[in-house]
Length: 265
Image (tube, rainbow, N blue to C red):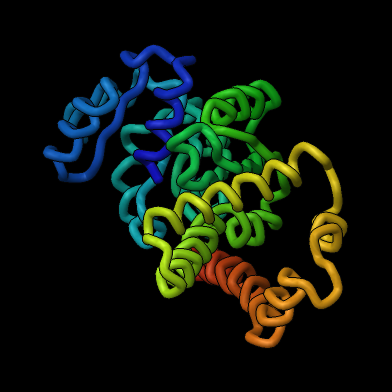
């Protein structure tokens, strides 16, 4: 996800490359790759210019949050804006791990940020000013659309948009399989499926029609679409989609609860 955000910000061309820095815990080779591919600045943890940063984006794995924040606290200044991409980790947890009144914005982009097409949510922590919120929105908008929500809505957003691209890729895999089984090449099936998904998404965006209305418009009684939808219903396709979103959201909530327990111990 970190690379996806870097790619989206660089792609937008709105920020000078010499103002974008990246570091990681120990993979120097990865830092070299990022510099070569995107032209950004990289440094090891020991030489990273933390004090020069206006915004710090935390994008480590949630399970590493506690150790990472303990290590980073001495480098982070109380007035620096923190954007957290840690799924399931509440801003309150990060505030408690860092400095008093630390401004923290919780962020959930998705991997489509790579091409500037992310659906990204943000929710402001207790100490974030209106100006800092506006700066966060401006930065994230370089990667796609931004939605400002309440933090308690972040879990369901994660289930829909954070994990959502994987659901569509899973659907495309099944479309490719069906196409191949019927004699199309995998490449042709992918092209057809991709254009179909893209067209359907654009119809929702540009017509502002309710999805149920658009579905009904192409579903003739006893027709091919009706047969396909009946199969989806018979095989639990609709319920499976709902459960995928709910399970992803629940997992995000579980991570939050685990972090909360660590703080209270």
